Image 1 (tube, rainbow, N blue to C red):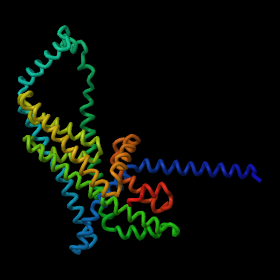
Image 2: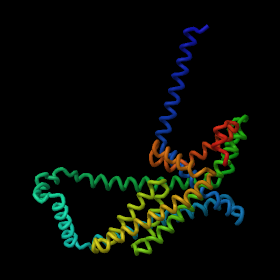
Image 3: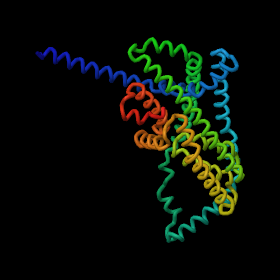
Length: 363
């Protein structure tokens, strides 16, 4: 017989459960930065695994020394990446310093008159309109101070984030076996083997995926560099590296990289004749980048991505598309790793389900 006491106890338990879930979600929201650090460290660990295994198995390094050497190489890569920006910034600053402002003003006035004539706007006095609008009184000059403070805060947070990620990655790489043994003790006995097998397969497939991603970015970087060198672009190495790095974002990243390459090319040629020098060179580089993206999208990306995670190229495309629509750029970046993890877990726990069998037949 259901009594009021049973009902009240049930309601209290439900409220307590909701409260606990809410507190857990709030706690996860508060420590979201730490969670991001852990995820980045885990990704670096997966990328570092082949190198660590090589150092331990082939060169007979101890786990601690292998982890130290690997992190030193990562640190050099990060330092090199940051230093890449220095020559690019100096070069563009020099281009702007050498800019013939009188010539540029003449070009702008010519373009303005052509636009006015084409659209029949010759009766409008843009200078008078600008003065009447009193734009200077509406400019918030405090924006520049806020911008500088934001840049300084970003640099401080970035430095702390890099140090934290490297510290966590060191222990992830060094004590992998210890973490696995401790995790095994905490797992329920009835599902222990399934969970261990899932973790091992996920580790294997994601390691292959991130190594394959590095191979893909390397191929794209080399092709971008060839295009830029053919047309004599300044800072070709840096521009190719940045544009290749943007390929981490599926489908959208290459478009952003092409726009970035076009802008940097125009800036590097600033002061030269627009019609005979700047415009043709920019168009040729954009066409070259489109050809590289066609090669990447149709050859290297489907082969490397599908082979690394044992998934069909169409399957990968649909997963990225759905994740992008649902969660934006972040969803597109994490789509393949998350989908791979889900497939492994489903195959391990529901191997006889027909849908799962179809989705996981290649892993």
